[in-house]
Length: 250
Image (cartoon, rainbow, N blue to C red; front, side):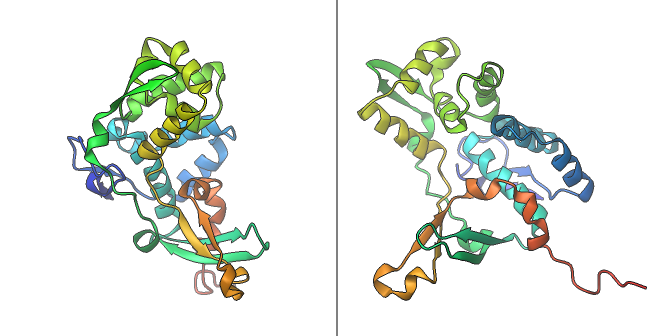
């Protein structure tokens, strides 16, 4: 199936192609995925990117913010024909298990992108001036693969933030030092950049029925799309149950 780039978190800004191809996995592909996907979060993220790129080489020219969503989308269309998902979460306050069916069309919303931020910015970090840009996957992998080798940083969010700074390619140690050692307003700056360029999918708010029995304690539990990606295929049977007509025993 073709996904229009205009429907992605970036709004398709700066793309020279109108769409990318994403299709649900077959049984053979799921078995291969479950057998070969690494357990390490960094290796797993690279594996998910490669799965997408093997299907459509244009993914290499997509922004990281869009590919994060496409990873979710591919898994969602694999486990659900109508692009809905049966969600089960535990309320952090009362421990109630909340079940909710979410829909891609009704429940997944992007923060509206401002085209002005897509051309990057000049920032001051740790007393130094740097230029930021919006990395596409081919740009991001140049940074990411270094951390896969040396494992100095193992947090994907931190690596994505470092990849926003154009000077990393020639001054990697300096950029890393300024990001990892950030304090005070520099921390606020980095969090703002991360929110602008990566956290483009709004959290899904789920009402806890137990907490909300008391009208003064109406409790909404926020669920991120990132958290839904973890162990996604374990939910396959819950989201695509078979009925009695599928198996007729002799």
